[in-house]
Length: 418
Image 1 (cartoon, rainbow, N blue to C red):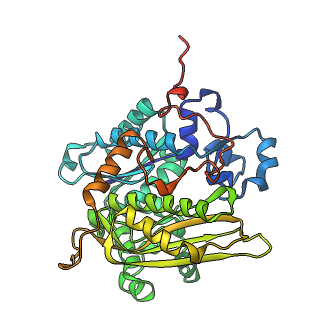
Image 2 (image 1 turned 60 degrees about the vertical axis):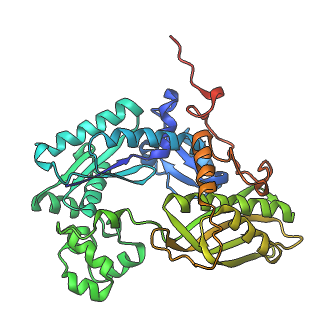
Image 3 (image 1 turned 90 degrees about the vertical axis):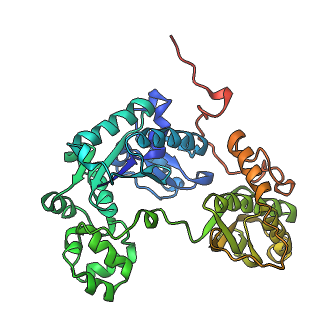
């Protein structure tokens, strides 16, 4: 049996944890530079406020309904996520953290010890609420895909009261019939449109299809999804937590930048972020994409991207910074007010299976990178960094509605009135 524990509107819920005054109010959270709405609490959702819409387009609507607006407080979210995952991990020793607000559990060897899955799910919810004040949904299923479907029901369908279990044909049909096909894990927007043309509109109809036919029409991945919906496990635990094939770091600037040195510093900073993520999943970079642009709404749109191939795959941030330095003249253009830039590792190799060159010197500096990561993990990001990253005051992202960093800054520690 698999379980998926997923927070309800995680960013918006996290904003309410340390601010009781907004717990019963509609809350939305904005993306980088306060551009779009990325999280909507259930109260705000009932007012008809959509996600992924530019803030300026709904600003008057938010003011009309007294909606609380917050900028993304990533430091707070990361800390609360870690606390939530620690609580979840106590309920099963086989845990995989899928994202900042989702965690899979796999009850492989002691399913017989749990007599009532509904009761166990409510224990998980109560423990998380008691220790973090974060609301979650818990879904159980015989496969990872079914646990995702059950979690969808737990969060979206009020009749399940936060916990849903798929452990029989009856419970499976009940939930899948009420789940649109585009909400099935692994079914994207394009595939769902093609399925709709064939009269397949919900998850139950997809589960009824012949897997071999689906494989011919779509792919082996969609075939696996059909099997998983029927309780046939096709995703191994390693496949569920497979490493990313590409890793990007990109962001628009709080203020436009116009000089080459500023652009170089921004790109090196993104390279450092990519390097940290690459090392975290034990990979090496074979090709690095480096790009920058002004706004598409400017009179003359300018965008330039370069791909830098490494002779020997690397995880070394210093080598990535050197790559930025070698292509900066091709990317920068005088007179352009740059609005956005980024760096992406577009070809990754597993560090475990890489074949080194006997005659090439080792430039990975693994021990140096490990030291860099350990220091920054212990004392905070950018405590130790490359000089080329510079200072970020001018181009750091705009967060006009930022809440206090209650758990990571001494000045913001909450004061309790006794």
